Image 1 (tube, rainbow, N blue to C red):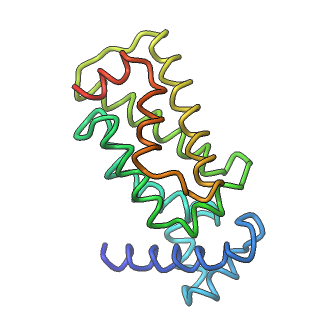
Image 2 (tube, rainbow, N blue to C red):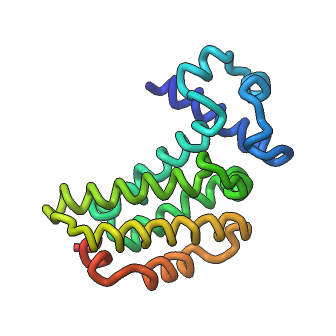
Image 3 (tube, rainbow, N blue to C red):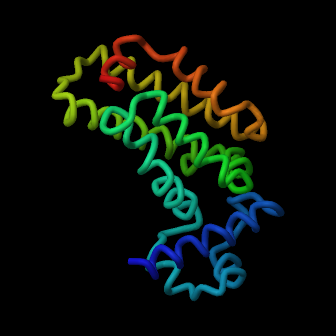
Amino acid sequence: MIRQEETCRRICETLERLVQTKSLSDIKVIDLCRASGVPRSTFYYYFCDIYSVPQWLWDQLMGYSLYMIGNDLSWDEGHRIMFQNLLRHKALFSKIYWENDCNSILEYGYRGGYSAIKNNVKTCKGHEWTEEELVDLDYTIKALASLTTKWGRDGMVVPVEKAVQIFSDHIPPFLKALCDT
């Protein structure tokens, strides 16, 4: 498990360097493998394509932040840690937030955040979601994913505490209460 994580991190670090000169969609797996010293067979053992690399890193970072909201973390705590984690990988995320297709980190983060919060509140709080609440959750998470993308595209210069405040100000009160209790 440690070797797997080390290999995946080395691939992520190499990708972070490569996206400084090319867009993610222009980077080929073969180029990433050459630059990282990881054989293609090993790459494909851990990843299915170039887009799954930042998605893997996203899941690693969000597993202790966004994906824990409504479970071990409150709304504000989860987002504070999320922004801090993304800042640690600013060189990568500030570049890949410009990708706009179905593989974008915006879409991936939206799907993961929605699913995690929905499941955490149901499992940990015993809350049965109504259809109206799920619409509110869906639109809130999509809007916040777009705000996170804007933050990344703008160079992550808005301070973390200001970003957390914005996120806290743009959530329906019932949803914040469900996540925080």
